[in-house]
Length: 69
Image (cartoon, rainbow, N blue to C red; front, side, top):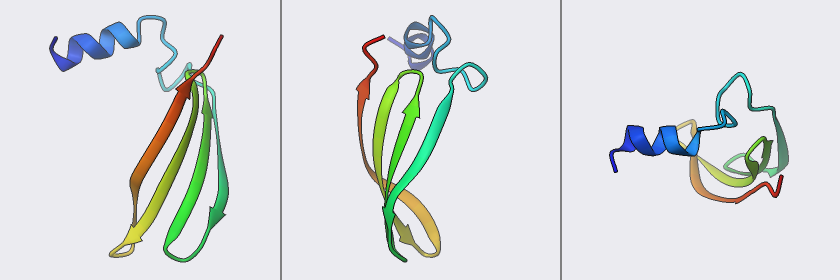
């Protein structure tokens, strides 16, 4: 399945759309070089680990669970 078809299939009810996806970002912990963030969104919850390389934050790991609604 082409990527665009997959995106359309996954977003058929619009819950991934920027205007319809309520979200809250919470920084759980951070230092100068690493951070742990929680993202609550319409599709569920994500926990994201970030690190700072060359002055820019990058995602190194993400784990998520779809909402039961």
